[in-house]
Image (tube, rainbow, N blue to C red; front, side, top):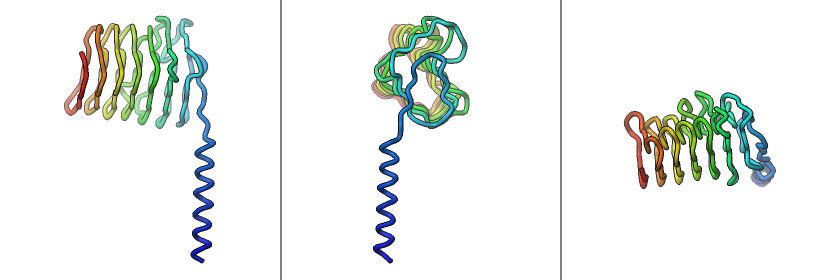
Length: 185
């Protein structure tokens, strides 16, 4: 009986590992995309706005989402929309590894919680560079030349190893309990 249970447990682990290994990452190919399901998403090219619109170049309407910009750029071309807009009440959204420029806000997520923003450059946006809700982490980001704040966070949040220069103001941390380390205003 013990061998049968061990064999069944081993088989279940092999199936789970195979499923995880074959999990797909969805590709985002154009501005105006809306993410409605949890999962991993990656840019497959630079995204360019310019057609006008509202919301975001990428709209996140789900929790538990990872967006890897893949080193690419979201350039809204001053069309009025945000680079990435996360809907109110969503949580556990990660954005990493790329540039967001010439948008309303680079990342607009002040009513979402538990975001992880890493390795993102927000450049020359018409409002704030990065705007996140409570319980979020912004790490190794650069916010430069934005008309509003470089980084705006609801506390408690963590802002680490982040640079915000040549913005209207560098940082705004709303409320108490925010942790900062190695930030450069």
